[in-house]
Length: 77
Image (cartoon, rainbow, N blue to C red):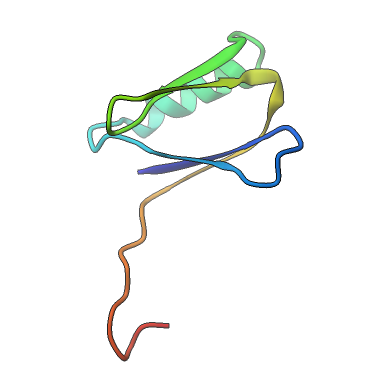
């Protein structure tokens, strides 16, 4: 699972690849808590164990999706 987070006035969003066992409802709940002001920093641990802290007041959008598999060959578009 990939999470993309827009932060403040930064043109490029953060892209965080989550561990395979991440539960989507759990991460959505933590994001909602941050956006509601219950958390000042949203801490997320990526698939490699690195921790990313995102200031909750600066989150502009969140996109949760699956990683696209690369297309290879003549049929790739």
